[in-house]
Image 1 (cartoon, rainbow, N blue to C red):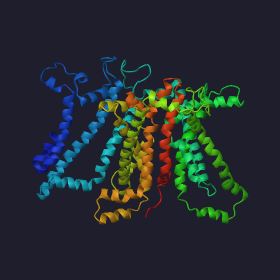
Image 2 (tube, rainbow, N blue to C red; image 1 turned 135 degrees about the vertical axis):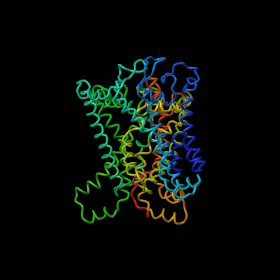
Image 3 (cartoon, rainbow, N blue to C red; image 1 turned 180 degrees about the horizontal axis):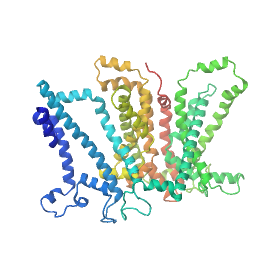
Image 4 (tube, rainbow, N blue to C red; image 1 turned 60 degrees about the horizontal axis):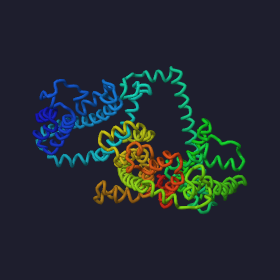
Length: 618
């Protein structure tokens, strides 16, 4: 029986059953290559050969094990010897162990595939007497498993960039890692559910936890509802027929969303500064207050301030989303309301009020922007001496920005990462969403639900895990590391968004293309994508914005000054000098915001259409 012989050979040497029994040489070599890769990595990174040849008398996994065996040992023991120089770092061992565990699961899956394939290939020969070549096998595999082949790289990316940090965070909860027990000076141990017991039974722990939990719930509800409601209000106002110059007002409203978030936060930190902030100074000059207000130091005021700042930053996204929905509504409904005879109250609500708000709301939005722009032309250099209207206008801050800092290098680094990230993210998201929208396959519903759950977790859930991951693969201080993280983080939310849009594109167009002889990918590129330009533009612009807004990940992964991105460089500019370079920082912020805002202005039509994602394109 060739099926048994093929299976027995492949149990010990991967692909040998396919190579010798089933005469599928290419497939057999590929399976054997995977086994050789695993063994080669283990031998190359360990001292197994030295131990077998007697060069090492005593073999310890801690010192002599390879990448895989030492990873498993580290995950189980979390180290055996404390110490900063020659000791074990428990958290690093845990992360390495998680990485090894995931890799071993992948290799185990390939091993099982190898065994199943050896058995099936041998059984097919026993039943038909026909030897199927490797070329025919791969052709059949592509046709039957097309969906899984396309989604496999995406799944691996999500597994290591998104799921792996979550696993690390969960495992950390079952250890005695704490401020008083930090590695590498001390070893971390597994403690089971002790931390969960203390969380509910130790007063200090429980009071802190529930206090933070309560504020988190308040923050979540308040920030979400405020952004959504205010965004909806602005969208309804801009959709009103009585509002003229809609594009101008929409552009003003979208500026907070278009500007890099990190820079906006730095601006607001200076505006609400309790000692030198211009807001306090303005209120004092007007005589409205007698003492400076501690916006950022008083616990209650700080929370209110954070919610208001988040409202300013986030309402634009809700406004764009709701504007996209309103753009698909039949304008005849408004005409019908007038014919039905609206009361005076309704006329005020839908006609007079929009006129009032369209004038006042843009002013509130523009105040921080006007202040940062005027500061960039201010002759002073510190926050304390900066005024809303400069006494003497100057371009010296822009000249100093390029002369005294590496602003040009920071800008170029960020631009390169943004361009590559948008291209990679759009490619991954569009192909993944296309597969989810156009094909039926086993595991589709579970995959979509997994993406939905993953979209609730930020990409920086565990900085330590991400850092060690890229350290292991030699990607620290390389911009490609940020592209990988941003691309993986873009998948969960954007796949759902794009899938919703593609569901509205008629499937009959794809079927007609298949009848005409188009391949699946040709139908994608020549039929589906041309009809999806609004959503493609939306994803491209939002992903292009990500590197300009992010501070945490570039600061963690790109430590060299020449590799800094703009957010990191501008933050260091005012943080290290205690605001003595504030006006130069303002100049840098303006140079960042202007081109990015222009991109939003140019493509705002497609952005609004893209997030509507529901119209039938048939």
